[in-house]
Length: 289
Image (cartoon, rainbow, N blue to C red; front, side, top):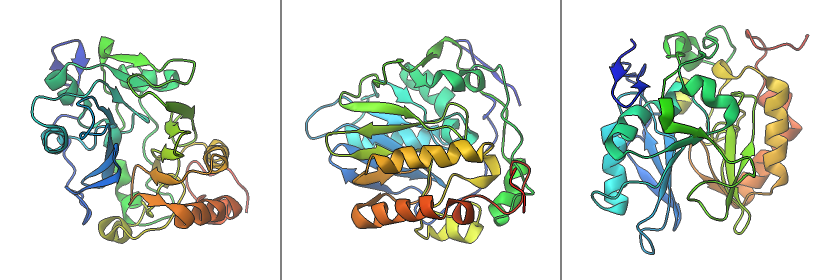
């Protein structure tokens, strides 16, 4: 449903509530003093900023449709009332990462930043391919055709990230283009402590399986299969992130990981990418058996 909103925005996520929840839904975890991971239903939102040292913070991604109130309440708990973020950064524009963005922009009046290649999906110009319900994987994959694929329209409220790799209002962090799951997908990395916000470039749960999504069973996987359209690019993106040797990572789905569990999992994912990540069949699988 296209609903016209003020401020030159259109929210295609309005009234698109999806009743999907994991056991972690509504819970937040301080991964680092200035990196907080909040789980909204089945997807993670990150808050970057240390509330003990500053009242300035940035939000990464905006969760599921119809979730803005829950996310803003979690932000208030961490940073105090009436303390809006300096900006919203989107790793990409899939429905579970932009579900609350129009409502939050209206509430806070902040600028949104994303990769230039993602802007058509954030300004109403282009829809994503329909999710692939035929892909190998599990019940969430089978349910995926009901997921929204229409673009939201943030109008003049969204801008391309700076071409020099810097991230607005996040000193010390840089964005890295990690396509495959989406054309303009990005991850965020801080060299100082090797902290990584991976988005869906890789995740720490098998997102196609309803049981594993619900229980949040930990395992490093490639991006969610039912929305990944370019597996060669997805592989290169994981290799790019593994080469950074991240010490700690939050991902779009699943629990944060660190240390040996993270490094071993990423090495295994690269070594066995065809087996672990790429489905045996599906609309976007080009390999020949």
